[in-house]
Amino acid sequence: MIEKIKELEKHALQLEPNNEDRLHWQRKVEQYAFKFIDDLPHTKTYIPTEDGGKDLLNHPFSDQPIKIEEALNILDKNVDTPGLNPASGGHLGYIPGGGVYPTALGDYLAAITNRYAGIYFGGPGAVRIENMLIRWMCSIMGYPETASGNLASGGSIGNLIAIVTARDYKKIEPQIIQESVIYLTSQVHHCVQKAIRIAGLHRAQTTYIPVDENYKMDVNALQEQIKSDIADGKKPFLLIGSAGTTDVGAVDPLNDLADVAEEFNLWFHVDGAYGGFFMLTGQGKAIMKGIERSDSLVIDPHKGLFLSYGLGVVLIKNVQAQKDAHQYQANYMQDALNDTTELSPADLSPELTKHFRGLRLWLPLQLFGLAPFKSALDEKLMLTQYFYHQIQKLGFEVGPFPELSVMIYRYVPTKGDANDFNKKLIHHVQQDGRVFLSSTTIDGKYWLRIAILAFRTHLTTINLCLEVLGEGVEKLK
Ligand SMILES: *Cc1c(COP(=O)(O)O)cnc(C)c1O
Image (cartoon, rainbow, N blue to C red; front, side, top):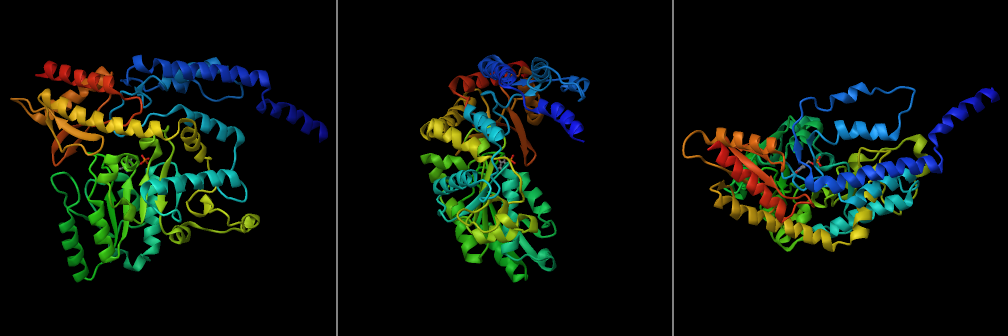
């Protein structure tokens, strides 16, 4: 048996490469990464693909290893070339962000040390970092330091944690689900509807309140609806506002919504996955006044703080409510119970073993300081206003004045169908590939969107975007 164990050990030791081999891999990865970043200004943002990286299928897993050079070639050709390049400043579709460099280093360190950030007992430093980040975000958003939250993988999970907490806090048990009412607008992000369903609330009454001409929730209509629901014997319990909608970047009148929530004793949740970090700017703070009065709030550092994908945050004022909705005990966890110096993420979210996500935010904040983040956010706000004026000079019709950094616009040709024309125009932009734009449909109207939030997007990028759109219109007219 000893002989056999030693034999196995010899093979297993391949999982611990020596210094020289590590350095070789590391250098190759570094060269690849630096070339990727250096090439960004000259690479297309979108490269249409026929085969969608299908060659990957020709490299199945086997007992035999391949060389790092080969692995990187496979990735270059099949993963990092076709489709959308979200690291590019030309990414102006959906909601961009980019991926600031120290995020990669934070992920790297978290992966090497593999610190456990689920329970304070096991990883006190890691948990402390995550909780410090949560307290820092609370202070930006005007939440008290006593609020809690969770560093989740994204805004979708953040919204789910908040909605589940609201459900349990408001005691929405199966027998009363059908008369329980949730208020939102048609402009909420679809992950909110998804979370409502996953939380088992799809049989609740999801009531869409009309929006005004700027796509913000109509507060009077909300009040009327709640009153009439109460008169009908229903149980209003949850109000969901948006701090920056995906379609047009609209911010609901949060302070008014907070008044209504207070008056009717509703849980007030705000989805600020896109817009929340504009609280670091004067303009954002003014528009989002009242956000601090919500009960729970979602913000996405992988959007508004330009991190690579993988970090969305939920903040919740009532710690006990968040705990009650998520905490669970097991005998094999009994050693970890007693230390209450810091809250443990595992007690506040569905996760147990998790990536030490805090480091991917902690390191950029420490290495850059906050100032460049604030400047970049202000820059994006101004670029959007610049685009709003310039695009009209090209003859485009525009939607509401952008309060944040998303706006809609469309070209209305003198003859022919406008929806058709703009569909062709977006196709032209995407085939061109120098910048990437996406579109949306609101009340049957086809609109082009621009979302300016990639940290690599600057004035030259916006001018290039205007050029591509101008060329498109000339070609299609
Ligand atoms: C992106 C977004 C979400 C979803 O967040 P993910 O991080 O993609 O899971 C939710 N709400 C809004 C307003 C968003 O912009």
